[in-house]
Image 1 (cartoon, one colour):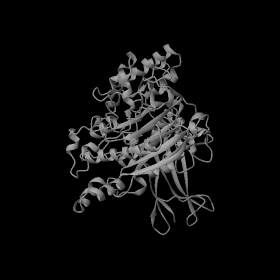
Image 2 (image 1 turned 90 degrees about the horizontal axis):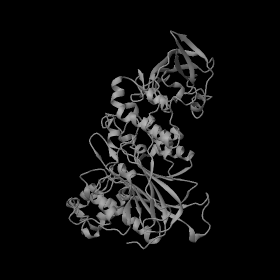
Image 3 (image 1 turned 90 degrees about the vertical axis):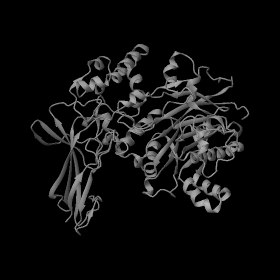
Image 4 (image 1 turned 60 degrees about the horizontal axis):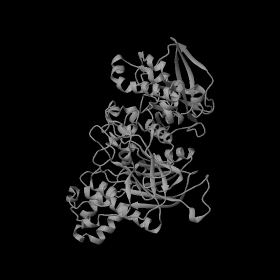
Length: 598
């Protein structure tokens, strides 16, 4: 007979909005063991599995700590209540917790006071886009929080009391194997039941397996990052060139593949915050909240693109294109290999053409052409790293319609890449970037088209790859050029390109006024790049960039940079608030009339 051997949850801390999927181990009638589901519609040997989820409703109201959401709150900040800050952010578990968090907590008070003085709209200023895109706190009503979650045959179950003892009442909340906690569940324990049922009598057979979770916690929501205007000249850029009327925004974000998010590597991040069910929801909430017109993501697993990001972003009006890394080096599960994903809003752009760059193919061509036969195997071992780039040509729409006049079509070329990570392969990094730029030059030669080059280049400001991108050449005396065992970088005079690329975030350095000083302090004085875009316990620095062709595009605004101190309260990234070890970068651009390219 069918029997349940074991049930458990990968993480016992449930979070609002993050699906819970119990692990259920079964023994079939033939004595084999499986984790496959046995639904009522497909019984096995006359039996199927029935699932139920319950919420324990205690007579005592429980609040959770805003800093350590897995802990029960013991004190509340009255200043938050006076400032009308959402009550969930006012709770702390201990006096030490409140004291340690005060430097960051007081920012909420300051922003609330500033917002109230400036426009009287505290909530929009404080919680901006994240609340609008689905961030959940305890002030959300039961109906609002449950409407979009399907946990059974109906979104919300009748208040059927199944048990009451010792001041506790159990309510049935779900009838599927999976359950997604809602705001109503915050502070409560959930109970999962799995029973074998006779298909004819519909009666339970044998022992019912159960498990209890920890108390449900709200999804942590970081203070929203503001969009900072850097163009104070209306529709004229710094050179007096006329710009088009409609701007567009571009987001570039390495989201940290689940395959790389190991507890060993990121031991400082709580396991529940590192789990993919939590991170994917937090990442989606953040990405959607930015409302970018074009989204360039790196480290997107192929299964996560197909099963999550593509369908979820489709719901928000995006069309996606994906390029998976090649698999000549990779030896793991083919479904979990990552790649680059580019999305664009269907009402703003249409897809014209896609180019896929496989650096492995370029490595094969290079070795065939210039590497002696006896060294080819060694050369390929060094150059073949499975990295790729995705280049997409888009056409802008006007009023959600393509432009009828071919002469007035506005095209845009967007490159999205993830360059090799190994720090000792400086020659390979530079060669990959040079190969990508040569491909973009060919596109530029065939069409006068604005270009964006986005991604994780795994190269710090001042490195040879960064110099090639930003300066159009590499100084022959650059120390990175000393690492070239295959002589693929010679002659150094070939390390040039003619695209007038400028880093979008360097625009902060060119702004004037007191309001920009804090943003300038987050830039490196030498390179005018952000001090960091990647923060782990062992590394902090900039690896991610958005480059644009300065003869055809003007930067209008930039997503504000984060300060290291605010991130270090959780040691590093990822954290409960930010679900990648990189930060998102976003720039707003406007097209302008071209000058001749250099």
